[in-house]
Image 1 (tube, rainbow, N blue to C red):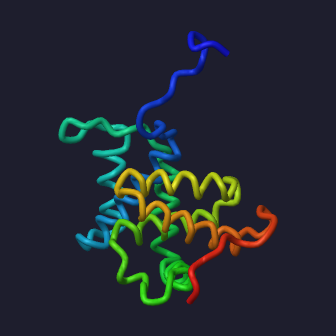
Image 2: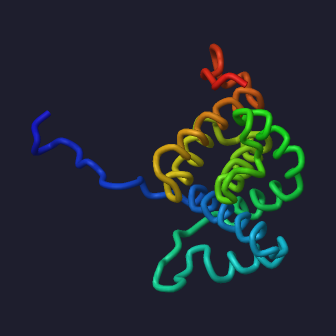
Image 3: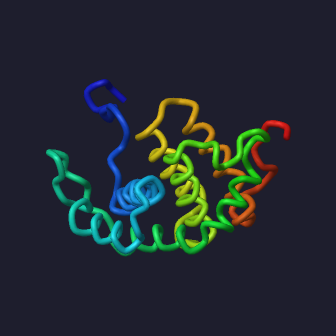
Length: 172
C-alpha cells in the first residue's frame, strides 16, 4: 500500500453512534441525579428535550437513541443496589465504590447494567464503548480501571462470551 492510498489516521476519539451518544448522555444524567438530587423523570425530560441531538451553550449534542438512553437510566436506578454490590466486589481493597469519583461510579453503573441486562450487545462492545466514555472525562488511569472492572464484570455476567481466565487483577 502506498502513502497515497493508505487510510487516513483519525485524530482524537472516534465519533459516537446513536447508542454511544446514549451511553454518554446516560452517564451525564446519572451524574446529575446523584449530585443535584434531580428526579429520574426530570432528568429524562431535560435530556430528551434539551440535550439529545440538540444545541446547548454552543455545543451540538449527537443524535442519540432516546429509548436506549431511557432504558439505561431507568435500569441503573432500578437495579442500583445490586449493581453497586457487584461493582464493589470488583474494586481493589481500600477503594469502596463510595470513594470513587461520581462520574466513574456513573460509568461503572451504566456499563454494569448494560452487561447484565442488554444481551443484544456483545460484552466486548459494551466495555469498549464505556472505556471510550471514560476517556471523554479522564486521562489514562481511570479508563484503565474502568476497563479492568468491566472485563471482570463481563466475565461474571456473560461467561459464555469469554474463553480463558479473567484478566489478572490486583491482590485483595
